[in-house]
Image (tube, rainbow, N blue to C red; front, side):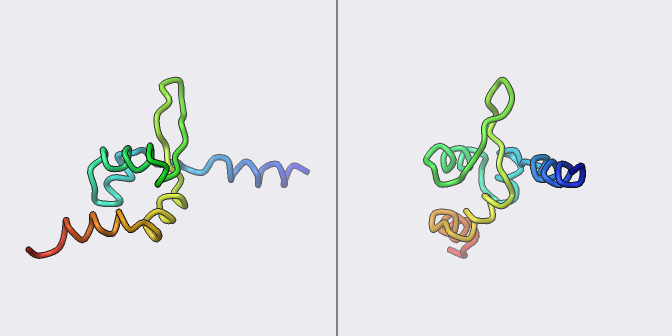
Length: 81
């Protein structure tokens, strides 16, 4: 039984990313991360008494793979004019 409890606990302790870390990962401004989150495009969790936004890595990778807006942002940011 103890092995089961420990295994589930590892899942719960997965590291969550801050909005700044997500912004750095996606090469966008932190305001974009907040806007996409509040619009429901990027899943987030509220933590702590201040309700800070936190993100699971899987949710961020899912967003990167499926978001036309993210790809458009990258294209406009890095394309040659």
